Image 1 (cartoon, one colour):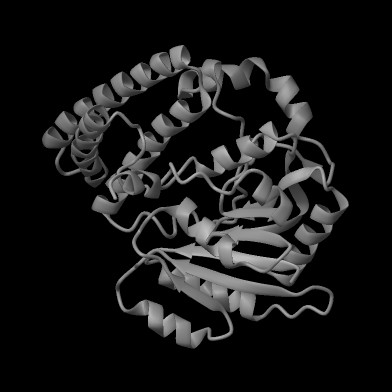
Image 2 (cartoon, helix red, strand yellow):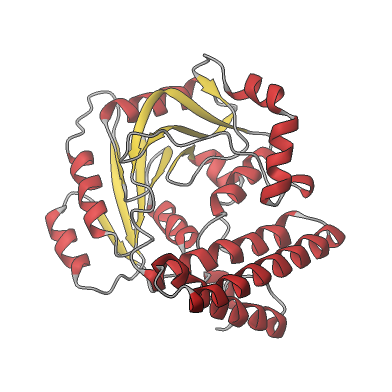
Length: 326
């Protein structure tokens, strides 16, 4: 088997349906591929329906909503392909994209992770000039200042006419990696429940001497936020998990003293912002967007108390946290 297309789903059935329909149209005479979908226990009656509708694809049901990393690793554990394509359910795939990703991966074995251009429902290309979070550019203001003062260097790095360009990391929506590289870095880090697991994966490849690359030869459709922002409660949960994953990344990637500095700044900044916006939401109750802030503040207080009691930054939703409670 040449390629295993690996998809993790959680109640994103409408988007997944369009994704699988696009894959159904792919017929190749030059390479073989399989499709594996891990459903993170949506538990809404759709799993059986989709399993029957797309009977030529392999459907696996997870034991719970144990996170994106866990779902990816489960899919990879049963995959037969020499190459893995981790694909979001809110994407659409073409034969051309698969051919180009496979060809570039074979031609450039130094590339540990390969992705391609992505376009959203508004025909806007995603920015893929991502840099690893670092001590001097971890937060928004410092990151903006870094990009401003290094504008010429970054333009030379990213704004060229080469087929391939090399960001520090690429989004987990489209990640092409061969089996050897995946095994070498021991797969996805299950400390993360959602968000920053793609940054961590790319960091592991870079630390192991590999490159992270994006090819300009092909573009994949990716619906922005199509599977994670369903309502105010879900939006509050996912936005909280972004913050939690930042804490996890800091704890995994920085020395003790830098961790203490960054963790303290992150806690102080986030709580001050959310307290202010929560008070504002009471005054400006007619603005729907503000309603997410009190829910986030509640989620964060629960998380920080749990982190203090259990002495871990890992999200209580992540499988590595759940394993410690068994």
